[in-house]
Image (cartoon, rainbow, N blue to C red; front, top):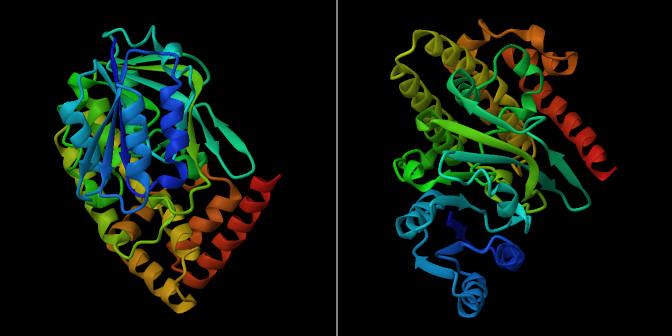
Length: 350
């Protein structure tokens, strides 16, 4: 099977050579590499052209900057592979990744998913999503789809893992499946990957998981989108939740609807950790941090969902954090998160 690897690029010159070189060294040869230069203003295009000139499998699309989703869609328009893999330009892949997935890239599996490494400056952290190779079909696939919206019951014990299945870069999609999805539909929500996978999972027949670590997710890139504070985060969150509600309303199975609604309720509450972390570690002044956080916590949807939130699945530390949120203790919330961040940074340096 031919695999199209699509790499959107925007001002990635610091990491781009490592990314493209890891793809070029792939031991699986039946690939095409579509690099989408999304209006870069640094030296990214020069790096891309070196690979294009030296390897006929590499192609480049240059376009005005219009965001990650549009860049992926532009690459998908000219892709000819049986399967499609989206690789971020500041990450890199295992050279044996596609060879290890070869038996699953057989036309029978709609999505092939795998584990990955989080690559920090001084260490790497393995993230095995599951304990063994697995094919998700029927109810198991539906449950995995629901998990994208949010956790329920025991799944809530690790709030920081709420988005562990969301990313597109640790999945290879059948092209006929991914072409049915509008990749740009929810690009203003800052959750393009989540929305893409929600649709892909839902419309797929099965999802294959191989228990291998095949991708390196670069966590040292402080300039990445996930590390930046945006003043429109609240509006983006609202749009995402409205999108979820619309998606759930179109599900025909009543039992699934109930599960999905519970999952969405939990997501809205558990996602406050990421929101608070983003605010607390931003360059905003203390009073501004409090004001921004207040905008979230006075929102009726959050407060209403606390009435149905089951604290019993959380450890004491997490219970305290979310109870502070429910009680709207703005200053204490930010101080508590800073303490959590301090402990986290010590752990990452060990």
